[in-house]
Each structure stands twice: as structure tokens, then as C-alpha cells.
Image 1: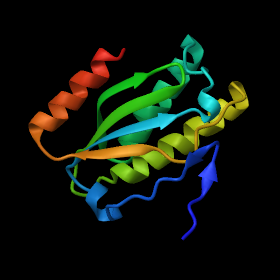
Image 2: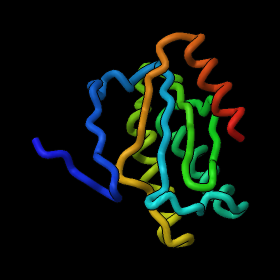
Image 3: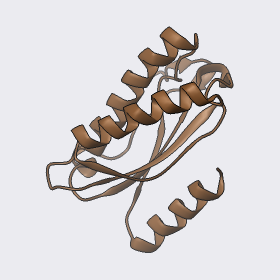
Image 4: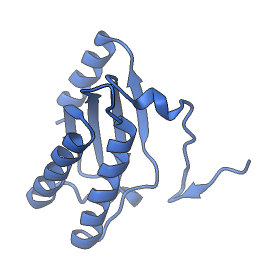
Length: 136
């Protein structure tokens, strides 16, 4: 299979099945703005995207454990709060909704994919949360 290329980055093929992102699991996500444009650094953008993040987490039965909007990327850690929670769907929904806002208000868009890591232990989750909070 020939890898797909977007914005100079190779599309990431996820190794884990979608079921791994369901239920009471904790997942760390990292998403970048296309061409690394620095559009996330203003207060209006932050407020709008944070409101969308809160709504998305609620819709998909997730708790936001930590987040950090950097000028050109986002770190967010989500944890499912019910056995039916779909953390993957929450991140896809977050990128779609914030992407629409960014296109309409900042002339920017997300890169096609995002990076994720399922945090399998309490210690691993605490380390990642500490890292995200330190980057603020």
C-alpha cells in the first residue's frame, strides 16, 4: 500500500482497533494546525475551542483530564466515564467542529490526522497529565 501524503506529513495508520478507545480508558491526543500556522494563541480562539471541547466531552461521555492549546497544536487527554464512552469519536468530533470554526474565523485547518496514545496505567496517565500541564 502506498502511504498517503498531506501537508508534507505521512498519514498515520493506527495500529489498535476502535474498540480499544471505548469505555473507561484514558487517551492522550496531539493534533497540529496545517502548515503549523500559529492561530491558537488568541483569546477568542481559545474561548471558542474550549467551549467546543467541553461540549464534545459531554456528548461522548468523556472527562477532560488535561489540555493545552499551543499556538500551532493541541494536547488533550480524555478519559471515558462510562462503558459506552467513545474517546476516538470524541476526538474526531472535536477536530471536525473546531476545524469548521477555524476555517470560518481564522482561515486555518487541522492537519488530516492526529497522534494518540492509550495510557494504560495510572502512573503513565499521571506522567502525561503532568507533561501537558507543564507545557502551558
